Image (cartoon, rainbow, N blue to C red; front, side, top):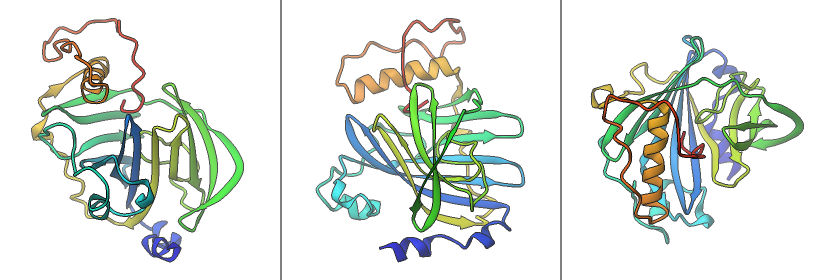
Length: 261
């Protein structure tokens, strides 16, 4: 019910006075198998930094669309597969850390029990703003579109929440992004709850679990290998030795992995 979602959101006036904001999203993926999981965006307004936390270990595979607004526990009791992350993991969640002042992005991701740190390029997105508006959980939002790494995104941002942040790597609009969908139908993010002044200790990033830093190219290659193995049921060749110190300068394999990169 709308009143439930309304109660989940804090008043705009109280949000504007805060230094730390936490936004909880529902994530819907449709990569061969429909997947539902949650994500959390931690915003540090004072430092102009965000941490995106993907709750991978709580994913529901093949979720029942008729209950797509329910929580994970409810969905797991329906006609869905049991909770699964697909691979054994060393850490339960994955992270994207964005430093807007220094224009730096770091990915911390568990790839088959191996945790890597991956530096990414900070890309300024070219947004097209539209006059079309709609309510997202009782907050007025306006439409914007952009193309990012081969995918076109349609998002809904709230000017009344004047923060240029959003889920995953989506950002740069004159308002917090409350809903985002890739036009290929693979990804949807919907904000469900906003909390002001989350504890300073959150989120706890498990840096002691990181095996090593790898390049973005190596990260894409390994993701490609895991995708073929998990979703396409292919006898994928062994990935190149991403644990070696030698790194190739060219990327021979054409891969559009914007769903995860």
